[in-house]
Length: 428
Image 1 (spheres, rainbow, N blue to C red):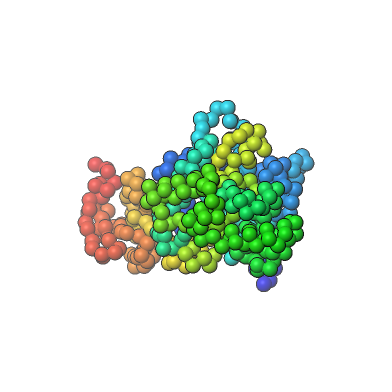
Image 2: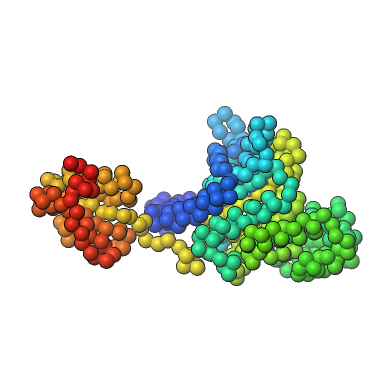
């Protein structure tokens, strides 16, 4: 690659969106917004630059190596936002006294991370966030998950194409406690178990040993991870716990929502972020060939770090990169140019005024109109417009102006209809 070639592309890990690329992104955004609004989530947004201190409160000092951090001209420590959850926590905490809880908010935000790229991961992406803040019941989890399923459905996907894997960190903690794993070790074990699908068992055992666990405890943890169903969980638990009852009830709610076939219990879903306290979930393509389509869960303590008190919350993050790849591989992807209703062209400068009046009138009626910018011959006009993305065409020539009528050609059926100009333009 030459220096000039490198200058013509976006920075490493970033993306350009040409009009044909934006079709897919717009379709994804549209499905996200429609699903969120159908479920009565309210849209919010914020600046793309966030205080570095805010991000450190959630991610720790090491977050600096994973993001685009910088100082502004006044020496303030800032960063391009890597996610929206810290911003949400800040915004909710700032107006906690005036908000009526529970709140249901969503946003579509561009986020940036400085990290190694792989399939489904870039250094910038757009992310749909759904959050319900201030409701302790698992009906909040059901609402968030069902809204995500609605978005996937609007994109043309079905449970045959994806599956949502769901667990509860509280339930997993109950299992480990019953098996003699001390609560003080749980957080470290969770971080290891989050990697269990990506590394060899020998590595898992080594990492567990490094936490101070003995061989018996490690064997018991591995036996927990072999659980296949809630019935298996019940056998290991012995007595029913509140966390077990919550998960049982959540699956009953999924039945009520009609999405039970889209969700499965999976003890291996842990989510590596320590602020998750209860139910956690991740969605994958049915072949499990890609990164998670989305993920999220219950987080009860995060807002307290920002002065928000003991507000409980459930959130979901759904990026555009993995779902765009999945839609492309499923052939459920908009291609070509955006569809238009009408193209209006004209032969010479003498017909420009009439052509503009027709185009303007159709646009006022809500039609999507491609109005020619200069005169062109009929053959060139119909060659340009007849490529499958425009429904009909009007070409204005000298005879049309003298007769005060134009021919509307259906570019799909090729049928032609004569219509008075004033009928379209609304002129006397």
